[in-house]
Length: 281
Image 1 (cartoon, helix red, strand yellow):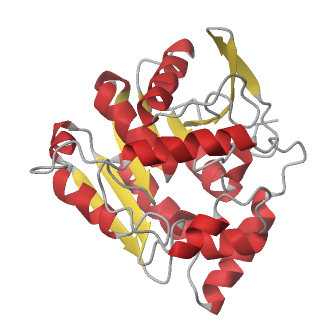
Image 2 (cartoon, one colour):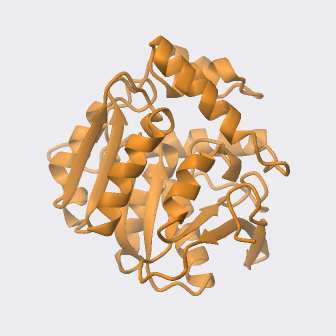
């Protein structure tokens, strides 16, 4: 039987004594490189939408991944984005891959940008969802600061943080919530140490590399880039997507209406249409 998001086994790859958890499945009868996923704050492999991952796996292999110490991976959690990116690069190489496409969501988008910047030979195409550049606009809504770090997030937290405000957006959130809990052997939650380390990493990511030209480093990233956000992202303000689109030399930008931080979860079919088109170009 062909594996899916709900059935693919969790595997481990060991690097320097730590074990990194990953899941890999999809269409191998293609010349497309695997699509490597980097997840949001505290998120593990079961915080992805099965509709999204299986939809993308129809055209290529996909690889879900937990960083050092996150969820089912072992080791001391990283507290710098560049170290998280270097770990991802090491895992990609340990899996015997010469090149991948990379999809990063939120904090995972920070990592995806640094991975592409620091290890450009590994990345063919770059997908940046609900994220922003180093030195971008950090002005999230104040309510985020009390909601995102909650020890045991509940549906209402995800609804506020990730989705739009209409009745249709709430219905889409409930459908996503049901899909993402379908797998029987769910990834364990990340520890409080992961939350603390990732908050510190986020704070270290905020300062600008240069006040005169803060996004100059983006112009060295030549890979085709797909940028997506909702029109009202309360966590990583939507203006950051425009900063990336204006400075990444080969970028295209999608802004979905009535959507928030996780526009791809609220609009999965629209996202798959746009994402598969971009990856196939």
